[in-house]
Image (cartoon, rainbow, N blue to C red):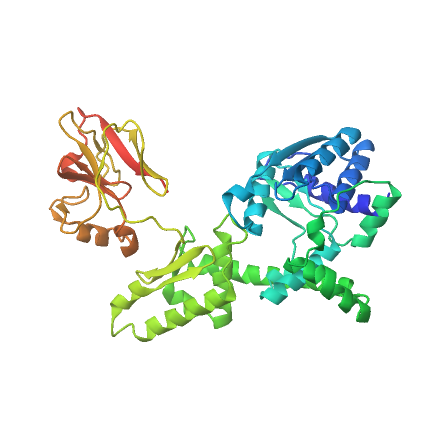
Length: 466
């Protein structure tokens, strides 16, 4: 068996025999097939394994980005090759040019991956044809742009993608080996002209920089590829430390860190924890904090702590971008918040039919669920509005008073928020539901005690989507 086929088989067996317990086992193998040399080799090698009953089932996934003039003909080529090989192919045509005047690599990548996730079986494998030379290019690209030990690991051999798993069996195989295999088996493939255009950073590294380096250091690809393995091993140690710190310093939901514990860590461990924190709670692998963002957060945090006794309100000023999140400080805790927070409601909304959900802002909706009257003060169940009561959604204006479900006396809305330990930035945008001119509730926060459902009432509960 050829080295290329053997490497693919090893990955296939490793990750089908040791599937995650969270997924049903699947022996299906999907090939990310662009029609280029690398993925053509991957497709053909997969077919050889299938012919020898070493792989149970394969399919090809092709994304037509619609960027190049030849994009449609490339799709036709891929469909033709798969037809000859008797391989099922699923194609997706994107309209990236209509989404943005400038094609962003992250947008294209995310669109591809969304398609891949939608077309694979649960627990199955998706094979990508990234090879050793791609690994080296990625390493240099990240080093030139600025990266830490995590980024120096370059392209991972495997990772989760939705309910499936990505595998990259060619990361230790050179481009030349793929070319030799393709020529030996008389494969036909697409030569993408964009690979030769040096307005792209990766192409400059591939076409200009690496050939010069290789003349002096002929084994540079092997050396740098080995370095990525070392970086990944060392990063795994850092992740173990960060995971331990996160478990010991965070609340159960992992979105809050105890400030008193965090500041006792060394500066290096603080940065390591921040980097891991943003990545561990996000579905987006590109959401990690940068070194500069971590530095800025620690700088601002240190300045606030130095002046803390003089002005405790300075805590409210901490609002620092960290990856695809923002870090805020409240109640002696660091809070990991969404970078895209809801805008403050600036108008009164009439809700004429509570049987249907209603959009408030940023695709957040309020909806009603039928419930049962309860004496449990922790449940946010109230009576349904009566025929003569209009339901309105209003913003906070200040000075509101009511008797919350857990109190016997009327108090200010501000005091209720404080008692319920609601962060100050959330208080400003939370919508308030009224029955006529009486506050009924803030979904998920409190209900008006005077409106609690009795046994003879229709009981409901309001919810705000996240």
